[in-house]
Image (cartoon, rainbow, N blue to C red; front, side, top):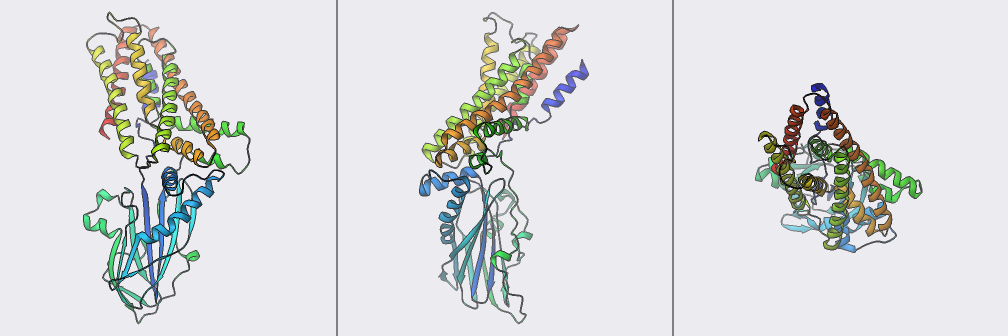
Length: 439
């Protein structure tokens, strides 16, 4: 019995974090490589951001584009924001403003869209250069900036590496104020050097400037622009599989469902019912949040996500600590004068709501992007299939935990094991809730 219990807890509780969702929060990671050659300044300005941030920003700038495909939507973002980013990159030589021109961009869609904007301008043969990036000032993403001189240009007054790809990527909170300013601003003197270096690389030949590859998304939005022309049933099947894979990942309700199902009462189907209810709450959360974001066009989601996570954490921790207290006091979870199953139904509702209220932001992005390009019906159908796949995994986990609990109830010494399981399940729930509250 001890080995069986340990195995079940190890399989289900090992990925304990509930923070597996990618939080967009208008995060933009930037990497800026400036190149000075005789009479010319070139800038490769690379940004990586989430699909939801791209979608919300573009909707604020140009509105919706019914009939567009997914890549066309992202390319429109590059066309619209490229000139704006050029204006936001302030350049001056000897105190005189220098206007950067947008020279196109390269789009790569990996885990998230990644843009490399190319800017250029004519500059005097020598002088004091000031460069300051004022774009994305509210972003919590990383930023790096480097300047190199080629074609006989020497750079004076800057000790950082000349290649941005060699500058370590560090979060803002690890930087001093001076270091943080240097990630987006520089002041140097440049002049011709007696040593002639090779000419400046062309944009197509420039080395990569080294932003980290973003964490891969669920791939849901890619189904909106499926190049193989698969029929709806095939797309829905893929979305179902993505939902199941999503639920298997750390932090998506399995631990909570299993821990709750190990408690006494509720019958053999309690765990399955909790898994289904959690997935349903998750679906409702995604739909409601997508509707709210569609109406407000908001993109800064970190505080919102944090409030949801802490609310869920409080509810889960409260239920877990209540269960531990009841068992330590010598009562079962359903002892007392209340109606049979009343407390069980109440805690089931609270756990299902808490477990599903924190949304999958890729699913939210799917709904908003689908509506923006005129494919809302397909987006909602894919969301439903995704949620069914997630529900299937949670139902299986809950049913397995409930069957394990039923097997314990048939063994000798079941009262002792019932109390141990109740305490163990309550402690796991409390740990999950307190982890969410701490973040």
